[in-house]
Length: 167
Image (cartoon, rainbow, N blue to C red; front, side):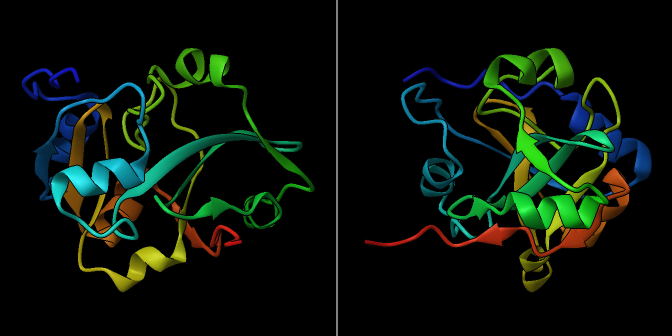
């Protein structure tokens, strides 16, 4: 396992500083074989439903957009399309994530990407006083109030998550 570099301020953290939004930084070791939000939750001692992953999708009308949802949930692409005013939405290919956002897989943040894309946050975030999102670097998470994340990203809440099917 690689150790996350000492958390120099990431673009996401600097953005929150500029907006005067309080947050805390949480770091863990990086295991390149498991970059999931569920693994991150285990490492930082948080509920997987409280650690939100950021996925990058593309709508047929609006283009690139980001969806934040609990680490243990699956993205409902139809719900994302509906929330974003698209007829259809699909995940961007993994090779496109870094050129589009500036972020590597396992370190994609809804904050401070190369370009300000529309962001949609699963409505379950409102159940928490604070949630975790990537700080834009593998192994580094930001913990902040969901409404503060919403404001910082100029995001919208929407029902995006579906629980993975259990056998």
